[in-house]
Image (cartoon, rainbow, N blue to C red; front, side):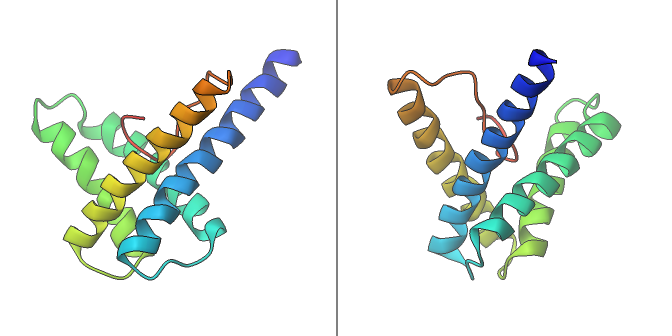
Length: 120
């Protein structure tokens, strides 16, 4: 039971951190909607990443490209702008989420990731 609660806490905090990243990127580069919109975008993006990775991840180079394009497609769908705007939101989101996780680490809070932000 304790492990399930711990897993739920890690999932929720990771989704919130991912949402912070996407919200920061959308705020700078697009029509930032609410923070809740960013959290949902992070969750949908994570799901798209998992599905695309499961289907195409085994293909050298092409699998990684298709997986990343699926993730960018979610951002493009959820926010105004084209593919370059989506890539900018993803990059800004990665930087912002990395910063938040580093700050949490400095405060002694570790073990979290940024759900919906690849590579964090």
